[in-house]
Image 1 (spheres, rainbow over the protein chains, first blue to last red):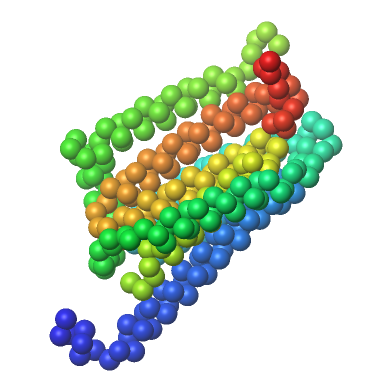
Image 2 (cartoon, each protein chain N blue to C red; image 1 turned 90 degrees about the horizontal axis):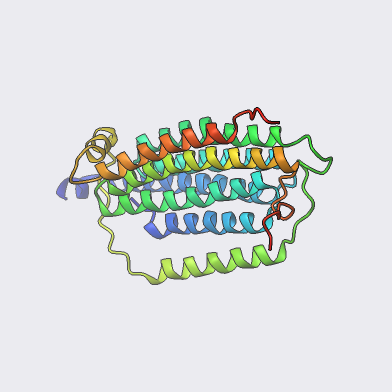
Length: 183
Length: 101
């Protein structure tokens, strides 16, 4: 306490500003790209909007001190899921001329529902007195994550269930897209 | 740490609402999946933010598990979409109504 009181006040202010600017920029990227991916008439553009959202959210993870999760987000979402989605777009783009450029859907009801959901969530967020602990210095989280995931008294069960789920998804996806002999 | 927890929760809520609107408004099945990914990302952002402001690591482990589930969901959902496209020549979710009573 005494040490920080002795420091010139300009240092914490500068750190605060940098963090606030980084948060604002990352949140702006994430939200505007999410809007693009929700509204773009072409599905490929929507997929690229999703890329920006994934990267923005990964940056927010990094800002929250979740270094391993930020990298996992980039590897799994950008490297895996997004590539899968683009494959889906490209493989389904040939059937009818309007596919890949979908007919303009009803916008009023979905945006109304989305706005209501956002208003409700925001009201609940601001109306709740969150008992937050002042966050400490960010530390590397990889070792802690590994211990938590393999500790039987913590998240080992969820970890093993996720492994089984991934195996089931692998088998199921391979079964669904296999080439049938009878056609 | 100057940014309040509520700021992260507001970003998460915004992403969630945009995802809901995308799922409701889109008719291309792949675009609906894009909306689902937005929703999952919003939930994950909340988990990590709570983790940071409460101490501990449980939120991050669950965010990792959500990540794994999202990968499995995307793989299976795309397999289903491709299968429907194969059999019906159609990925508009309003047109695939063969099971409608």
